[in-house]
Every structure is written in C-alpha cells, then in structure tokens.
Image (cartoon, rainbow, N blue to C red; front, side, top):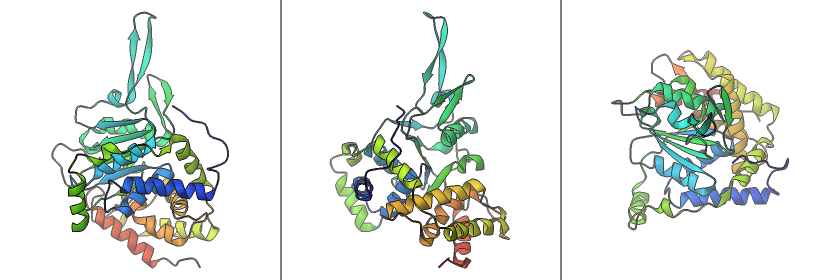
Length: 324
C-alpha cells in the first residue's frame, strides 16, 4: 500500500536514534559479526537507495536481505532470478476478464515494500532492464499504463561475481541504479563459531518479527533530507567527483547521478551516526562503496576487477584536501 506522512519527521532526535539502533540491533542478532555491512545497508535504505550485495555463495547475502525485510512491517517478495524469467513475471500483466470483457492488470511480485532479487545476474538483460524504471521511479509501465509501486520501496539484489556459467553481467545502466555495492566477506573464526551455534535449531531469521513500521521508515527517510550539508562539504564532494572524470586510469568517471547519490548517502550516514550535519569523514567512508561501481577503468572491466576501481577511488580520496 502507498503511505502518506505528515510534513514533519519522527517526533524527536531521540526517537529517530532509538529506531535506528533497534533496526541495527535486530538485524545484527542474526547477521553475526558484520556491523559495518549492516550499517552500510541501513544507510542506503534510509537514503531511499537500492542495494547490491555481492560475494561468494554462502557468506550471508540472502540472510542480510531477509533480515532487513523481516524487520520492516511491510510487504516482502523474494524473486529468484533465472534465465527463463520474463519481464511480465516480475512486473505483472493484463489478463482478460470474460465477465466484463476488459483486460485487468494483475500486479507481479515487484508490488511490495521490500524486494529480494536473488542472483540477479542469472536472468537475461531483458528482464534485468525491467527493473530500471521500478528502481529509479518507483513505478512500472505495462500496456501503455503506469502503475505506482508501494512506498517505501527497496530492492536488495544479490549476485556472485566469481561465477560465469549461466550468468549475465549487469550493464552499467543497471549498476548505476544501485546506490551502494556491498561485499560481505568471510566472518572471523569466533563469529563463525557463533553462527554454527545459532543454527542448531533452524534458521534464526525465520524467528524475526517486524520492529519498525513502514510509516516510521518513511519518516526516517524524510529526516535524512533535513540533514545539513555545508557548502564546503558539497565542494569537497564535487572535487572528488570531478577528480574521477580527470583521472588518467579511468575511461568513465562519476556521473551527476552518482554525485547526488553520494550526497544523499552522506546525509543518511550523518543521521545514523546521531548527527544532523554531514562531516568530511562521511564522504570519505562512503566514497568507495557508493562510487566504485560507477566508474570504468582503462585496465580492467567494470564487472570484473571491482577491487581495482575501489583502489582508485580510495587513492583519489587520500589525495584530496579535506575542508577544515
């Protein structure tokens, strides 16, 4: 369902911070040993961005997505992407009603608050592209008509970057629709032991119950937009963006959409960090996960050596003068 909220955010800063801490703690109870990953995903969620979770199989990509969905009191759909999946399978289609003699639109699984797009790189470019309008405009167009998607609307997609058999590389236009690209990584030994213990009686994520309403999420997202960004911070962000366009090792630098995305994500990070203003460290921390998948290098493929693009972004950040 679509929700309308008042023009003011959650009642007070204390209320906002309590909600954010509850969400982090709730997800952290099942996604063990990954507080940085959870925080990055939460930052993107509150900044109204979509999340691409990328890593080898079995390190918790789907678990993180399911934990986010289970924490929000909204509708959730999991779409398992396969080579035979069609655009109409996710968007919906018009079905002829013999009683009325008219075609009636039947919504597909995209019509939910939280979408888990599992193994998104296993489906064809045709179906991948069907997500573009949904992710950028929160709507879909079928048979010449436009249908709004529920609000809030979040896509958490997973993919395995090291598997090539039966997969289709995400095009740059699709990658650019994801606010953030996250890698899970292997857990440390002590946390992996906790994982073994926590799964003795089944999947812990199955026991999670919603702790935040869709209305609360919308208010938190609205609060992000009220976070102050000083002109010197905005100039620092633009210095970073323009440096990628002039870098000798890059064919393609960060777009204006990428700059706007980093701006909004920095506002979200400030809110999650219990501040109502952005600081340079917000830009520095988010630069690689927000921008690395938006650049194309001369010596590596964008979909291949992701670590190389991250290294270039970090090198640019290290060279830039930080505003005082």
